[in-house]
View 1 (cartoon, rainbow, N blue to C red):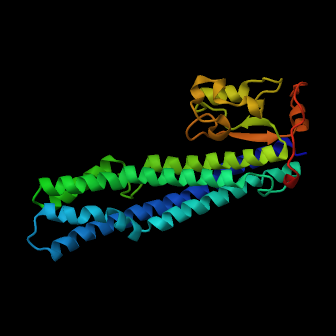
View 2: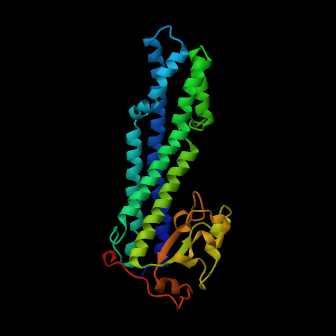
View 3: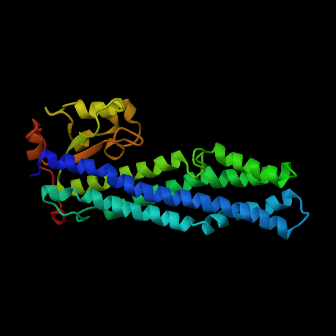
Length: 298
C-alpha cells in the first residue's frame, strides 16, 4: 500500500505533465494561425494580380470558398494530429498511478471504446471552436468587407479587426492564439486524465476517492466543499457513487469525477483502497458490498 507522500508526489506531477502536453498543442496552434493568416493575405494579393482591375466583391467571391483550403495548407491536419497524440500521453500518465496499489499501468480491464469516444469528442470540440473563432468570422467578413469597400487595404484591415475582436490574435505579442481555445485544450487534457484514471479505478475495484489539490483563495466553493466535507469520518474521502452533480448546485451539469469543481479545475480525485482510507479515519459503510475487480486489471 502506498504512503500519503507517494500519492501526493504523483498528484504534484499531474499539472507539469499536462501543461507540457498542452503547450505542445498550443505551440502548434499558434504556428497554424500564423501560417493561415500569412497564406490568406498572400491569396488576396495573388487574386489581385491574376485579376487586375477586378472589383473587390469579385475577389471576395474568389477567396471566400478558399478559407478551409487555406487551413489545410497551413497545417490543420498536423494540428489535430498533435492534439490527438497528446491524449495518448495524458492517458499514459493517468495509468502510471496504479502500480502504487499493485495494478498494471495499462488499459487492462478498461472500456477502451468509451475512452476513444471521449477523445473524439474533445477533438471535435477543438475543431468547432476554431471554426467559430476563425473560419466563420473570416468567411462572413471576406464577403462583407469586399462588397462594402473599394480599397483592398481597408478591406483587409477590417478583416484583421474581426480576427482581433474574436481574440485570435494575442495583442501583446502579435502571435495567433486564443485564450478560450487554450483553456479548452488544457481543460480537455485534465478531463481526459480524470476519465482514464476513473475507468482504471473501477476496473481495479478502487471505489473510494480522495479529493486533492490547492487550498488557497482561488479555490472554488465546490472544491472547498469536496475537500473539507467528511461524509464517512475522513475529510475529502468519498465513495465514487456519491460524487454526482446533485451534491451542490454549483457543480453544474458535468460529473465532478470528470470535471472536478468545474471548468479548468485544478483539483484531482485519487482512487484509493479501503485500507488506505481507513488510515485517515474513514468509516466504511457496512451495507456496501466489496467492489468487483476485473481480473485483467491486476
